[in-house]
Length: 416
Image (tube, rainbow, N blue to C red):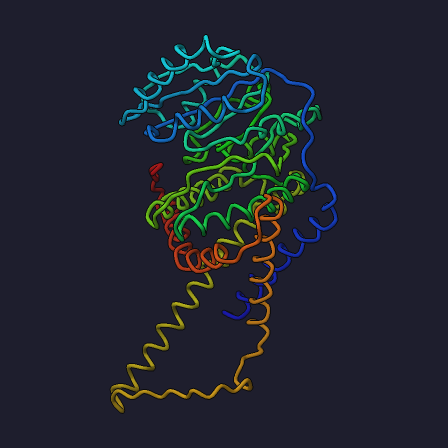
């Protein structure tokens, strides 16, 4: 039974990886620099922030440094009841802009708002009530937008059927192994999200930078808390309504990644918890052809990934426990002894199918990261990929098990 489960999960994982790769190879000629738009609709960018005193000024300045026409842009910064000096930083920044305005060719289009803490979704909804633009965007207060990113994303709205556009998130200047591991993961996401965009199967657009037609919210309603993953749930809702969502692979936004194991654990636990619970909320879509690749491919892929990681981790733990039991038995029988044979014999290398298939799956994983690096214009490297494999193989099962446990026992999780 254990082998059946293993082969089944491994087959599904390989099938999905090969399917993504074949899709990419079929459409690879479409991977070219996004042309600049010649039409500039009015744009409202909301920056929700909670305890972001260290980064929010840099976020706003990155938006002001974009090459989007300033007379078409408004930046709405919502302080969601921060407990640090975020509000004071925003007031000082606004005063600085007013002082600097006579020296600029434009009036900095920044407005700030303060509200009681209610979560990111409530901050975004406040932004919706005051936003005047035809296009509504969200930028996280710990993320920094590339100068040409917004103009490239707007290009996709020239297709009148496109209702939302996602960006590619890159880790800003990774310094330690934890951040390098995430850098490799985000490079892989550049590739995966582009493929899912082609397949109309996106389940989330990056909260770090996403754009929507304002009419989307008039039609399907405002943001919901959605288990602390409002950026995911709004896309679920759009997919159910058959709305077209595009992915702009070369619109880059740079984010501050968790720099410790604990921070990474809590962030990813929230993401997995949000995915599981949003799928449960929209379970009527699961494996229903009516809802396209979103229901037939993306959601099942997510559960296969979670199940596969937990299974492999559990299998390795069981093997370690079994081996430890044998060694304890040997010690009790004959005492401590060291049997070390320095001679290498290739005859003893296992060539069983599971190992070969597992290595093939790992090879495809590395290939997706390298393709993602190429799409992001990053030089190929393997150290960050090695960090990803090492760190995530150890830690990821814990946040997945925790997310499942919190779901089963109906425990809410905090943002941080």
